[in-house]
Every structure is written in structure tokens, then in C-alpha cells.
Amino acid sequence: MLYIKKGKEPSSLTSYKKGKFAYFDGCNKEDIRKHLLDEQGKLCAYCMRRIDENHMKIEHWYPEDGLTESQKLDYKNMFGVCEGHIDGQKGKWDTCDTHKGNQILTINPQNIQQIREIKYRTKSGEIYSDNPAINRDLNETLNLNSEGHLLKQNRKAVLDSVIVALGHEKQKGNWNYKMLQTMKQKYSRRDTEGKKREYAGIVLWYLDKKINSIEGKRK
Figure 1 (cartoon, rainbow, N blue to C red):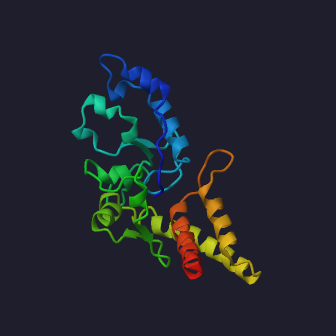
Figure 2: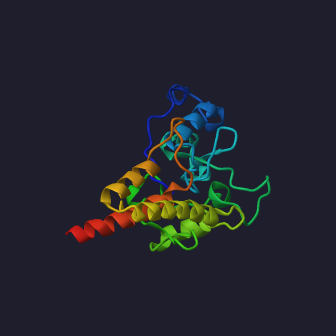
Figure 3: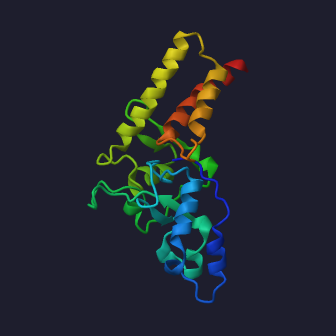
């Protein structure tokens, strides 16, 4: 999971909300999807899988069941998420919004302090937190270690490729603060199509640990 900085809502949504009988199912969802994709670098807000306009859902962070029609149109409560199931089959492997249902989350991708409480296990790719409420969200409510979607394996594969690249740099004598910062920038930025890297969260967490270790030795 990555920190998401919300931008302005689509102009079509702003105009639509001025109407007397505005409701969520009547708004221009295509515009909303496009805005969410752009904000999130075309990644699911929760599991960091690649999403596109034809394979995504508009997620209400605070569940729709507890909202008025006006509140359902609050763009700051919306995220773009994956469909959350495999080949149209719902079940125990479901993830993200599909698995969450109407449960209320503690963790919010807009809260950078909470995002910093997320950790990973390098040997397995498991995502977790020492904060019990956040850990429950990650493992139970959102099911982000779902075996069916190979999320742990995918995260580990991305991290392993970075560890190999870092090993090559170390052999060249390039293991230093600047090199780690350069690698972090590489995994933080978007490509020419505005896409962020899938599962970048585990890489950024790992690099931050290495960077903080060097900074600690400098003090």
C-alpha cells in the first residue's frame, strides 16, 4: 500500500453535485475512474496490482451503507481498487474492497503516518504491521496476503529483483547513500504513461530501512 495524495475532484462531479437530486449512481463514473487512476499511478489503492478503466472498482473508504447520497459523492472518500477476485469467482481468496465489504477500516491510504506503520517480511513478501488494528485491516479485512492472488509471491519477486540489482552495485563499489536514494527515486516516480511500479511499497520500505541505517551511522 502506498500513500495517496488526493487531488481535486473531476469537474463533471463538481457540476453534478450542484443538482437538486444528485446521487452516486447518477454521476459520471467514467470521469471518476480516470481521475482515480491518474492519482494512484494506475495501481490498486490497497494491493498495488495494476488496474485500468475496464478492470477496477470505485471504492468508498468509509462504506456506502453508512452514507447519505450526498456523502457518497465525496471524492475524498473514493479510491480506485482492483476487482478483488479471480476469474469472476468470489470466495476466501478475495482481496481489497471485495473482501472488505461493509467493514470499516482503520488504515487510510491518505494518512501517511499510518502508511509508515506498514512493514514487510523480506523472505516471504508478507505485509503486516505492529499496530494491531492496522495489521487486522491488512491481513483480515483486506486479505492482502491472499494465497490465491499470489500477492506475497509477487511482492517478494519485485523485492528480490531489487536486492539482486543492489548486490551488483555493491560489487562495483557503488553501495552508498546516493545510490540508494537514486534507486528509491526510480521506484517512487511514474513512467511516461503515468504508471507507478506494481508492488512498489515493499521496495520503498526496504530502501528506506537501508537509507535510515546509513543515516544512523552518520550521527
